[in-house]
Image (cartoon, rainbow, N blue to C red; front, side, top):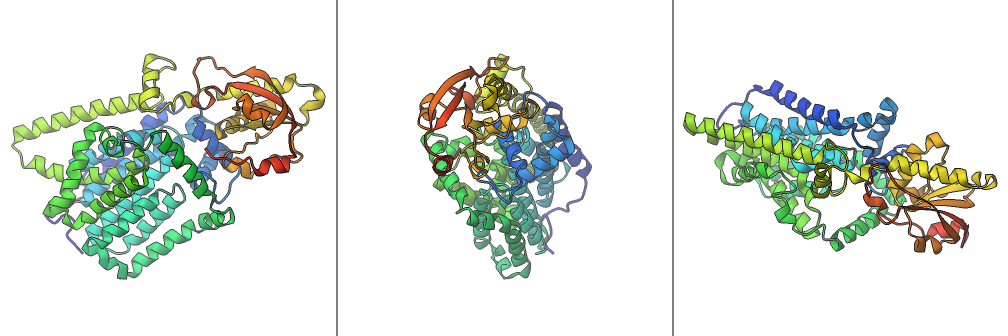
Length: 509
């Protein structure tokens, strides 16, 4: 086996502190997770969790499966629904510290890597509510840690863990394929290409493929609908300028500014120092992934899960660099690091976690800058369901038995499904994503309560539509998904038979 550091032994020292750091991150997220309400994407996951399948239009099945497990254990508690994302953030922090140890870092390097990974903006954002991003980050970091252990120990059995991490990634979000491409090219560009001849490598490949097989089969059966969804979303992102400034965003949005020197030092360590040479494959995994996302015009945060491994490398190198300084310089550097980390953590938490009082200046700043109006998408959903129920109750009694709720967006559909139960509302129907696959009910509705549509859109579908109510909430917050679509309509007399209409009603979002 290879010497794990090339220059110094690595001990288990600092592991307890590392796990306590991860636990602290998880505790912070749990403490604030009950604020506001369900996010639009959580309502999407709620609907999918109530219809378990081997895959969905928007993502592979693992997020919905985990959401279903939380619903079984905790019911519809918001804190319970966000527990696993909080745990994921803690584990990302721990794995980053363990990577630093694998690359020769001691206790201080482990803690620096753990904290740096934990205060990155996308990590905090993904941990604040349940989405596929919450777990996508964890699986990338798991693959990176297992790769670091492979390179540290030269034990080919780590390919099984790498394969399992890739498999979990493919069950969560397909962008991990870019990271897999980086891994394979990294092997080719380093002496680690020898693993292509290893049986353990191919066992890892087999593990990943077996885990992903249900998703592949489902996509085949549904004409690879995920490709159509990704094409639609990518076109929206490009047209909206959301893929612009990819490189510059890596320094201020995808990672916290205070961590930039650390991950840049990680690149230096991996590519320019003798101590980093055994781990150079990790550097190529980042560089190749970055290039692929630039070419594909991905959004800046897509590569966020690759940074913890660079932070781990930078922390390992930085610890040795600090140790080479005089005692006085060491004290100054450590003090500056503590202050910068504390300030950065407070700023990131203040802007990404649901802490600020709703509609305060703090809340509006955080919603507009760090969260891309994510906070607003957690407001108004119970009121939406209550309004729909009120409209239903205002209909003539003979119509109520055949009424259906047609939602334009999966968030609106999920809100009706979650909050409409106490009112006796049936499950909403929608043409968006996986909702379209679930159909329009049997028998089809004769009268429709439509929410999230514009009048001109509904007039193309129904012969008669009239405004029945307007959505509002006690805070006066404009929910992004309901902006200029806040009127509720009662529609009758569909212009063509439901089967014919439904064939052409599928759309993505």
